[in-house]
Length: 338
Image (tube, rainbow, N blue to C red; front, side, top):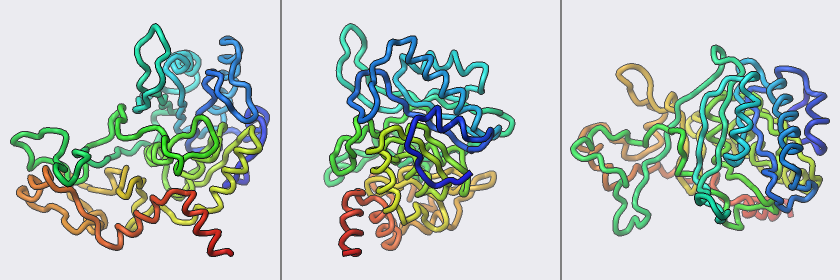
């Protein structure tokens, strides 16, 4: 099947033509049935009709995912709980991931403060999984502080130089709020969220599928990370935006042959297997070479409490290019073509 494209049309109709066991990873971020203003979809079904529809596309997603593949479903907790009931006989549950996404008060309930991502695999004995790390959290005012927000007490020499392992609660990723990062879509996800999921469970050259592609976030993450992709989008307008954005994605998110996710001029997610190896673990040379001040002694690790790792000039420039808002990238490319 021809990949690296977006298909415009109904997801159930398009998925019916996809062979069994095609994709290494499938991700779905469907409409939440909250009456959002989508371009070509009425987001206000009766609850039983909505869930019947969800059950149909979930079954198709599982069918077209490889036995070694992973399946991610993004939604509000209300619907994810019902998803788990339907998926119990179709795939194996791995995790419920919560990511930081405060929303408007809904009345007579606790203040919603997260979205959920269900993580399933088709065959646990065959699935791929990679531990991930993200940067240490520090005070935001770097001029006056820059201290780690976590207190390591007398064990500062044990600090991992880059950052902690990723858990199932993601407070370091937030909703798209700035216009320079947003498209004309009511529910756009951040690219670095999708890059983390792609790095979790796929390798270079693997294939990624999204039946609700929107303006292309999942597909862009896959392309940046050297994966093949296929998306389906009902809206002709959103599909065109996605295709236009993909055309400008020419720089792989790769540093010293290491696939990484970058955001706000820093490495946002990296695989543990690309950082270190062996027992006891030794840091890989290709990783250490990204930085000018890699700490190789206990005293240098203690100093990380007040000073962050610094990238080499070459790496810093590459990360800055990867993190440019896409609207600026498109304008720059258009100037070159003009």
